[in-house]
Image (tube, rainbow, N blue to C red; front, side, top):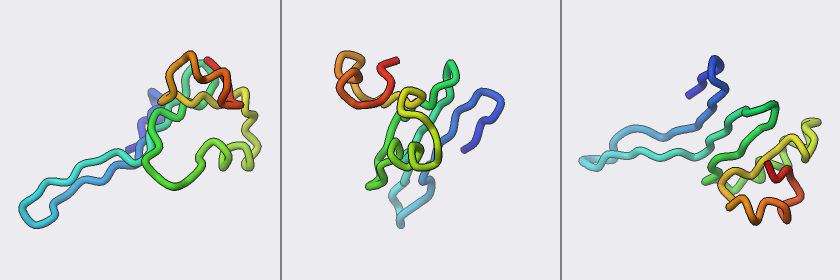
Amino acid sequence: MLDTEHDHYQVVAIGWDKKERIYGCSIHLDIKNEKIWIQINNTELDIGQDLVERGILKEDIVIGFQPPYLRQYSGYAAV
């Protein structure tokens, strides 16, 4: 799902496995105050490192799924 108007981006699995409904968010990114917020990462990818390798500065990336008091130790932006 891409919402370029509000800068919300998600990779979501939706469907059916026989009679069981499947819904899950693999990746959720937001752009807020000119920073990329990694809200969820349910993959084996290191999205933060991938962004850095593509030229995004670490101080422009926030690991949003970490508690605010731990973000200072992540190597990325705290807010």
